Length: 168
Length: 168
DNA sequence: TGTTGAATTGTTATAACGTATCATTTAGGA
DNA sequence: TCCTAAATGATACGTTATAACAATTCAACA
Image (cartoon, rainbow over the protein chains, first blue to last red):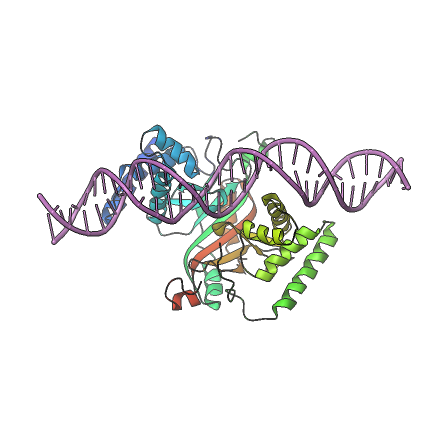
């Protein structure tokens, strides 16, 4: 879905190579701790998400895998992505049917996404908040919350400045 | 996606027929005020959502329409649903690729959904809250929020009590 | 009242996303 | 080494969504 790998929204310029290797090391450690098998496909998919630094559709990930001979069919991508999501290394952005590497792996958090309606770029932030209100509502109807997701739709700075679509 | 029209989660017993006609009247009035064309298909789709009192996939809605001769192809359903969502009469539940009639039409609100992972039933509540934190984060990365969505996943009371699946 | 332009609907076709199923391989413990 | 559980390979299919264009309807207005 995302169509242009420009400046990722919400992330200041940084040493990206370094941040990728950092994140990979963290993931490696987490998997070792938890006794999870961080296999080549899983590892590579996380790396792809980190490198892209942006939400990617499962089929985008798949075509990368195919190019590298790591799996040729949809289930290969979905399985790896499901593993990453289940273990807190990535998130699924429902609004886009897409996936992003988690920006806060290891920290227990409620992710919140800012999704630009024009360029589809996504920034991850957190929502400690308001948990209370939701929890109160949940209690009132005898509902047990496992997981919360917050997605905000709007426009990023570049897209507001530019004539529609030109930023994407 | 939802598979059983049992007691809708999060709604106490009530005079459902009455609540449907109430909601339809409100919708009617809103459309008149806003100069929107509340056509037969749109009207009927909202009615279906209200009657079902539960999240429905676009294709579920479509098959109802087909049965009534109101439109035979996917675009008919999607167009009506898009109209309802765009005008605050329904919401899209991203997690389920489904739609629900809005429980608070007319009131400007951030909807929050409680989605049971077992039976897929959905309750709508609101999140006035924490808007601040998100807004702060958005400002920090020059992002202009149009719309926020909160979806919580968990289990409803009946599903917790029952052996998995038996409630659905 | 007839015309016109915009919105809506009809229709076809296809794109995009996701999963069930079963065979095969691999890793790691008994 | 053997066994088992996890992971992967592969096929086929199901579900969700939209692009594109034709036909129709509606309402405003000359």
